[in-house]
Length: 439
Length: 138
Image 1 (cartoon, rainbow over the protein chains, first blue to last red):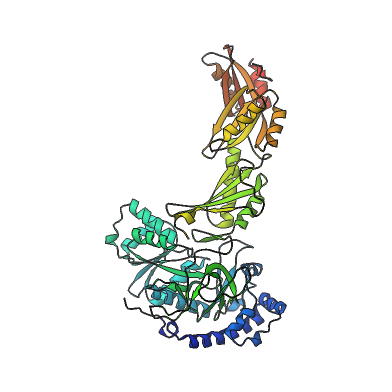
Image 2: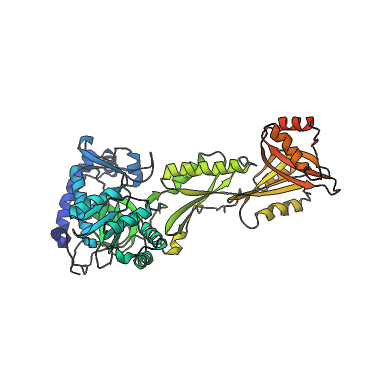
């Protein structure tokens, strides 16, 4: 297949030229951040850095990092660099009040995002002839609308399905001649399973390509998807704090994801020391947004582990490639595309009198769907002789967790002292998906 | 009468763990029932000195609790239990759970009942000539 480029100029730009553009944009965004983002201005002042002194891309390493906690503390609008009248859209990362991060987009940001998402889809092989079913959630989550605008910009026919109702998803795919499916990789597998149970003949559909993201997935899972659906499966990468989907995409060479580095300047650092690592070494991925107006971030620590590869790609693009993200530096779990931190679960559990602060989170994958089980010890003083009281407690915890996490979880009541106590850090999370092909 | 209840996880060995302790402490079970749900089980039993035992179980980190229940003796004949339940039903008292056992002498059966309104139930049963037992001495 001859590669087609959405934006030949930037996708094939020689490194020296790219770096010139990056430096130029970096200087501007730093000055904007200094003047419009109080939280970052304080960091700069504390670090004694003058943004007007930045003369090269190398100098970036002297700048302080931005963390998810910084953005949380800025809730709701403290990380927005523009007056609200210039903000045309708000998205928010999963999590509820207090723990969510909020991103504001100006009209220009929305245009840039659509442009980058069109570049992403084009890089994955989507054309204007395609009918693309967007089965990412529409709403505060960036997935649905992010892909939607990009696909429209590209000229594809968009079917905005959002999530859920799998049988209907399958029917629409068949009836509307959908050729591209866009969702989380685990949902793709689940959909394939439902289709098989219902005797769907994929030969009678036009499906040919899958665009998957919003959760880490492995090569094994890709193979599994390609075995179960008549598609080529492409990986895309993005995060709401940086823009949403559209940060990086996989070309047909499948050797890492090309970062749209004319807009997002990547670094890989040692997560312990914060030192910048040389190309090829695995560490924490850090992004600086070069063009964003609404909510720029400087050296945002993603928590995703990856490596940068500057060698030329066989597709011809000069855009740096990042290794596909297989794991994270922190304890964040991604459950069916939703970010879940064990600390959120802990705070819900501790708000119940009858529950001990001893718990374990078990993540499994059944029928290709992530299942979250929270095991809690019943406190002796709360234990009731009546089964219905215990069942009510279990249900109440489940409901509160669902409200907090936006994802269903199963609560299992355990005997006191049945979870192993450890001297040091308790092993709170058991992720069994890793054994089942999830990296 | 006081009954001890112990929370049990649905996993092999959890019942054994409690019973082993009772054996170790030389505790004789007077009556016993094991309720289960899809998620967990509740072991309920009657012993001689429930207050002491529940404290010891808690020390061993069992989720154990004391519950006030009614024990009544019924005639060991067809309809014996029915008569007791009839009295409670007519009084509008609902039963959470019950378990029964027959005395070794074979003339009487004993029913352990958990009801919402214990005092009323006790009064009504006694009025109808059904003896409520305070201690199970078999």
